[in-house]
Length: 496
Image (cartoon, rainbow, N blue to C red):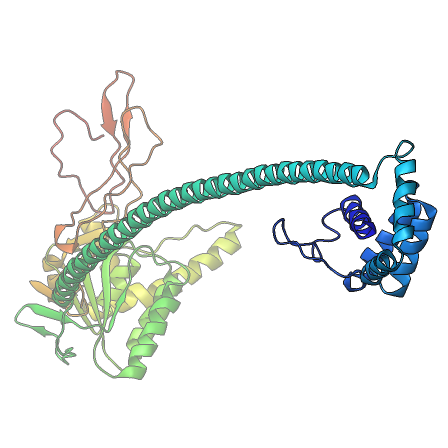
């Protein structure tokens, strides 16, 4: 019986401590229980059993003592053996103990009742434990299921998000592909357009190059046509069969002979003399004459020039210009050119003595110039002056070149003059100080029209148009040159 009690206390201690603490040492399930010696129990379980025995007030002290000794000496087996031995050896004591136990029954519950109560409590506790375990397990399973559900939901959400991201990425990639395709198409179209543009530019450049080449060819041809390319000629006898050939050794003397004219002419005579002794040509288109001092220097340079100086009059040569013509080594003129000789004039001033001195200088200069002309034409100065006033009341004796030839004023009358010095086509409109103004714009100049080319140029005189008191438009004619006259059809007096 004590062994049962001890086992009950051990079982009670096991239940009170909890199933988890004895999980590894728990007894086998019902139907498989076996008696385990106390000494083979774990030390911790032994200590729990001892504490349970000491704390239980329902166990008699003598039983506690026996149980204490049994646990210290050899465990439950020794206690049971001792109990058996004492029972066998002392049946009287056993009876007495039973009797005592019987006496105590009214006072204390029996050990079986306690064990039964303990078993019921243990069963209840085990049931509660199993319920708690089941409840905890259910909660755990619920939480586990919730966690698994949350995990699944999260996985589903992640999968959906990943799918959405994948869809977005696919859409983005699709858009990028479309944009890239459009960009590539645009680049291709741009390259194609650029290539076409470059091809067009190349074609235009080629056409331009061909046009420029053609223009260059035409320009070269025109330039070739506009330039005289042949060997220059410097004949010693430039006048043959009525034709005068003028080389590029030429000097122009036009307009009034003022200060500087002599230097201009003499410097060029010196240059040509230093170059060669071929004829030099002094060309007079139109000159009214001028300074006697300037004329004397020109005549002196002509007289002592190594190369002969040939003077050519194309339109008009008067006074000093006529003297230069007559005193030249050789002189030529168109038949319609006019030559004029007269006495020298002077704006003398001062007292009688000063005027007499000026008159003496005038006579001396006249002797050197007019006297030289008279000597060349085979007369005296006085006779020559007398003929001047005999032919013109003013003394301004003018003759056309074919008549002047008879008087000895010019050596040759030419039918044709060939200017071999003109080696390129002349260009540019005629320059004049007169312009045509529009009606009501007396001070506005009309721009000079640009010439297309040398072959298409034209001579154009521009005069200023005005309006008279009656509202009629007209232009003022420019001043005529000496010995000139108007041959102008003017029925409405537009030219005045």
